Amino acid sequence: MLKNIALLAVILLFCVSFVSGAANEDKAGINFASSALNYENYSITPAENPGNNYYNPKYVSDTISQGETNWHTKNVNSHTTVLNVDLNWGDKSDSLRLKIYTPDWQCLGEYYDNADEKTDGRINIDIKRSTGIETGTWHYEVYGYRVDGAEDYTI
Image 1 (tube, one colour):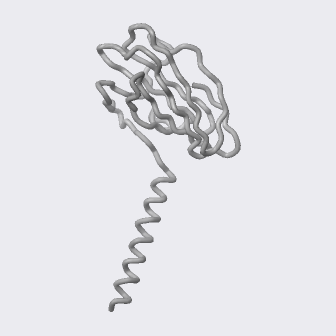
Image 2: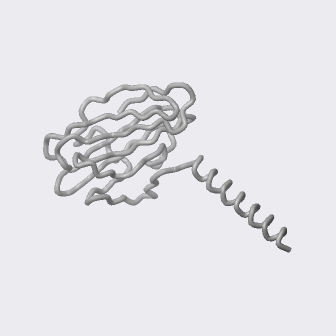
Image 3: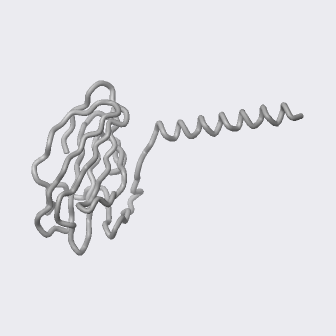
């Protein structure tokens, strides 16, 4: 009887580990499901009209590999209520993760390919705050979550 209970416990432990591993492998990150997320009085949504009334200076190009982390910054120095963040690598077979930090280092979440409700090798989101986006240097952490070789991207 004790052997059967021990065997059952091992089987259950294996099943839970397998399911957890599968969930981590297919990590979807934040998915808005047509509603905004709120962090620190910011509303974060899939991009509505990229290029229209957004503070988004020139894009930066870079390359990333599996397990590598790259940091990028964006300086916001004017009053704006919407900040567009657009990480584009264009290859659906690779997966990058994006973390966004305010100038005072508050993390506004981690995002994967489907964060903008599309799986297209791109994370294109808007950060909104009715009282204005915090001015200063915003920090973007790009991580090679699942990358075969090297992946080019812009942000």
